[in-house]
Structures are given as structure tokens and as C-alpha cells.
Amino acid sequence: MPPSRADARKNRDLLLAAAREAVAEHGTNASLRDIARRAGVGIGTLYRHFPTREALLEALVNANFDALRARADSLLSASAPGEALMTWLGELAAGSATYQGLPESIMNALADEGSGLHAPCVQMRVAGGWLLERAQQAGSVRPDVTVSEVIALALGLAWAAERSVEPSDLAARLLSTAMYGLADRGRSL
Image (cartoon, rainbow, N blue to C red; front, side, top):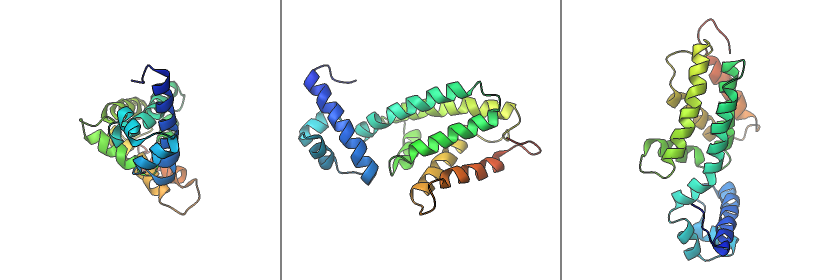
């Protein structure tokens, strides 16, 4: 919950802005001291707002997960369920590649119920599950594919793309290839 005092809110906002920059540059293991320095506050102020690295990451990615859940809702009415799923998985992969190391952090959070990121990750997975179910009902995706598998696939593609020297559209090209493999036999996306 954001602090109520104006100066505390300002410090929190400064810390989040500095964290976005530092994590984009150095990945999820960016120096917390560097983040505090960039924000112009002491390390104690950082820890008062974010007692752990995971709490800081949670604050950074929560807005992205909210957007992904909303996007899944909007895609549920798409006329081509397989394409809607592919669009959403592409957006998941792109968002996960924003911060180096984030795909691994998301996978770990999905498996760790004690993680502060667990609940938002699970909500995001549920939203993706609705899209997968709709694509399966339409015959666009094999019925034996699980939402955990397609989430892992998108995060794996994000991980591969962040480490590649290939063009920036590598994740999209890999996703297209993967979706071909997920397609129900005899049907297309």
C-alpha cells in the first residue's frame, strides 16, 4: 500500500522510477544501493518502502500484470481465439523481457506461494487460462496443452530473446513457430 504522507509518496515514486531504470539496465539483481542513490535517498529509505528486493520487483511488475489481466479480458471477445492467445502471449513475453532476469523471477514466483509476486503471477496465469480455454474450445490449440505450459513457453521465449544477438523481433518469430506446434491437428490459428 502506498504511503499516505506526501514526502513518503514522493520518495516511493522516486525509488520506483530509479528502480525501473536500474533494473532495465542491470536486470533484477541491480544494486539496491545504486537504486537508492539514483533516487536521491538513503538505503534505509529504500528498505522502509521495500523491505526486500522481491517487494521492490513486485511493485515494479504489478502494473504490468494488471495490464496483462485487462488485456486478456479484452481479448476474450476476439473473433479468432487462437490469434488472441498468441497476441496475449506475445505481450507477456515482451513485458517479461523488459527487465533482464524477470522471466526467471516470474517462474519462481509462480512456484513459491510465499513470494510477494505469487498472487499477481497467479492472477495473470488465470487470465491467460481463459484465453487458452477459449482457443482450445475453438479447436485452435491442442486440448492437452496447459496454461502453465504456455506461460512457461512465453517466459522461455522472453528469456531467449533477452540473451540473443538476433533481431529484436526474435521473440515474436519464436512465438509464431511455437504456436504452430500448439495448433490442434488439422486446424489453424
